[in-house]
Image (cartoon, rainbow, N blue to C red; front, side, top):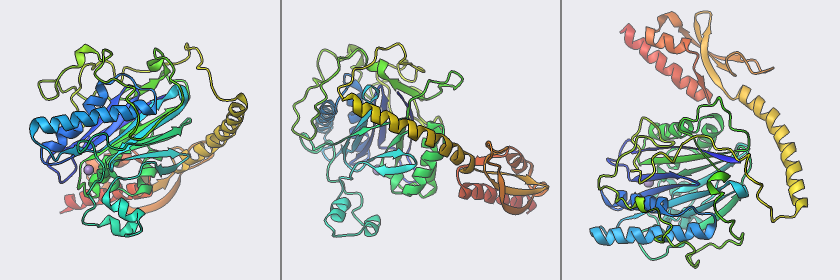
Length: 441
Ligand code: MN
């Protein structure tokens, strides 16, 4: 089992700076949404993410909680040092544990983690926000929450008090499951179903992340937008697939560590099993952010068109270094009874066969492309050329003669562009019409 990661961050259409930060580091990914003044939010989010990056590799929930408490103390320290006392940051993190086929999610604030399995997208985390409290108390409806004047008030963050309560979730994961970490700039702008559709239809994870950001910007982009997308793979890494900007994390990266006991603790009362400033800290990572640390161009998973907001401390060559396979590793011994394993295996086999057929049909049908019938530009459903027995069908004539288009638009049509939804194909056609009108004026 391995994990693929894609990510993107963008300041949006309104804000002057990007106070979101993301982390893709080893088996840990995170999104932090900073708040509190112009520079404060950036410092808070960056401090949190940098501190998590410096920690030794984590393996269990208690370590993640301890790591977040450590990051919290560092944000408090930065606030004290700079006098920016009202700064803070949300933090949602995911620890990928391929050796246990599970993911640990930890959350403080109103950024979110989502889990997607079989096309269904579920929100895992609860927002620690005033409106969410009001909804839970039955005082306002979800709809009222959307336009609530205090929609941005967060009730739990890093950087305000000692040891904030950390919500944790442990999810069993299987092949092709995905999860998504996102700042509120995404889900306040983009409908749940649209997020699910993009995740379900875009194969390349960096592209999926970029599409989510793009959609949030199209809908107004009122806030910074940051997404980290992860997909679980259980197959052989394909040698022919370029490993560009995909990070693959697997057992090998953890294999030097002793297996931890499976008893997991969560919540605020956990003793720190991680000694964050201990001797296991690599000595070459003591670079202060902002003091000349080099900005590394898109080390992993970032949209190449946006500037990655993190400065990379330490190990630029370590991330995104390509496929690692687990084949040569000894199997991890299971603590679970074998009967359960067999049952789970049987369920998986049935599910994989079902998914294979269902997936192929979905792949063949859940696409729209634009090409011509005669000289008319027509939207088709399906894939150009068809997939097995699923032939594409012309679903929407547009009345546009390709010869009326300017040369640029014409070549965009002859490229036969493929879209994840009819709406996107229509939008593409709308833009063609505009350019044709412009040239005829
Ligand atoms: Mn935000």
